[in-house]
Length: 115
Length: 114
Image (cartoon, rainbow over all chains, first blue to last red; front, top):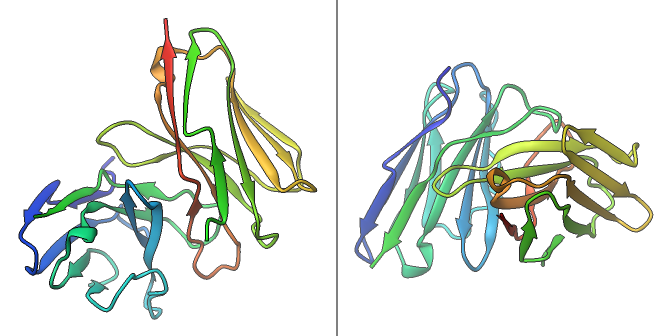
């Protein structure tokens, strides 16, 4: 079956430009997470969506970062006025239900390079 | 603040040997501890997980040992194979049926040599 997909797989952008990263979770999965994987910081949580509940944005590093999830499915992570420190791999994960016992399935990530 | 500390950063083990990766946590509210395996260019994938009410969990060649009093847990890979070469992350979760976000360790790059 189809797993979590992310697009684009690679994105190179100039400092100061805005970027949008897309995540298609596994069909029927209600919980969706964004994480960032960078050399200096490891894997860190960014934002969480569950059904129609308000998202948990506690991991977003600055107000330049935002995300939305439309129709309980596809999610878009937007980074405005990109900075070089935003360079990282952005990973999306989904799970069938909230709860620690439910596996989070990760996509392959989007590698963002800010020049 | 690193809530989950992982060591070593890299590890080289001969084929057939035992690979051991260690993690320690600070927050006693963590109650679920998964390990993830990541190959280059791929997202992490769940390998094995444990809850703190048991001291050991084994799945095939992979075993988690858990020491609640010491707030430590480790992954043991028995009979390590070249296909096990990957980066391994320990993680911890607080189960609150809200946001079960993963708090990751910094990762261990494992290389199995023939």
